[in-house]
Length: 530
Image 1 (cartoon, rainbow, N blue to C red):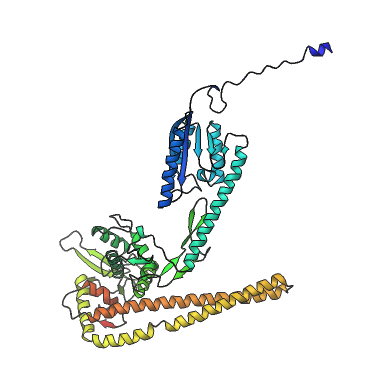
Image 2 (cartoon, rainbow, N blue to C red):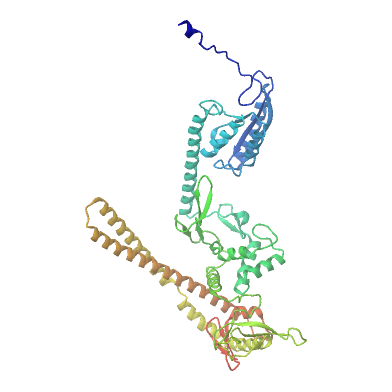
């Protein structure tokens, strides 16, 4: 027993002299360096007032504490809390803390710090490793407290769930507005409209003139690249207010249905409320097509004519849409190929530009159609259009009669309405069949047979609706071209010199025969050979 007592350990406690988080002496009188973080998620007036109030409050709160040394108030304005990537002030604060400039960060609540659970915990742990504490006023949580991380995990998860609920409510509200046909345009970068007093888009005349110019130049054969250069040279600002136009901007304007007074809503959607990543809607969520939602700048006929021309150019394998008015309109009657411009005697005083079949010198064709000078085509057009204009009253009368008959879409509208009703009935039958199979013991072979029958009927009806809509657009586009053509004839007298605008407004194409004749085919189908 006495031998055991001789080996009993004696423990002497050596008190800690340094703070394990800050590495400063425990009894040090050095003030704690304190910063604050504030954030508001929108830029509206009410939130702006909140932003200023938070910055003022924390500045005063820290400076009034004699044990604290004021570092700064870091504040992000109009930034979402679901991600820290775009929050510059937040990231600057973290970097300063890691550099040893901050001991304590004060913020209002977990949701102000971050609504993303992963971001919150990752940042808190990183700061903790460097001895930096975060205090959340609303929840009374200190991150260096033993229970701090558990409470933060719970609270940040709740904040993230709150953000998800907000996102879903916003999405629901937007889709409800879409379903009600309410249209909102990005006015700051949308040429032609401004927000009206009643919230409905209102036309800006000066900008609308630019839109009409773009459509007219395109229908005259000009390419988007040419139109972009032309607008830039005229010092017309782009939708973003820049002096230089891009071809993609012109294409976007030409394809935007809002310029004819309609609107397709929900072209894109948010795939993740945390990352705010947007995706082009390819059928994942509903789209809404609103007709006559606001005043039109471009007539439906002109718009559909432009869409048909865009599709035609996209299908073409030729780079035939250049600034020259003859490009893409003259064809070889022998092989069907386009005529292209060629330069003869380029290094001599006899240099000349001619037009000839692009297949003329290919080994498998050797077309015999002749080459043509600009003057030959221009003179031929003057002769052909004057012949046409001599009988223009009769041509206009016949053309209007044909247009009323061939471009009428009322029958297609009725057919489309009937097909859509049939589609709804088929959908109802499919849903009822699925419900019956889920609640009663059906023969599965019979179920599959009926379902396949309904599905085939559904797909067939959908395809027929697509065909009807395509035919509608073609007729509207044709009506637009003919209307413009007839208006040109009404206002035009006989000509003595080549008129490029008249050429664009009347000629559909020219066929060059092997005999050297030019067969002019006009927009109404009239043909005149010279």
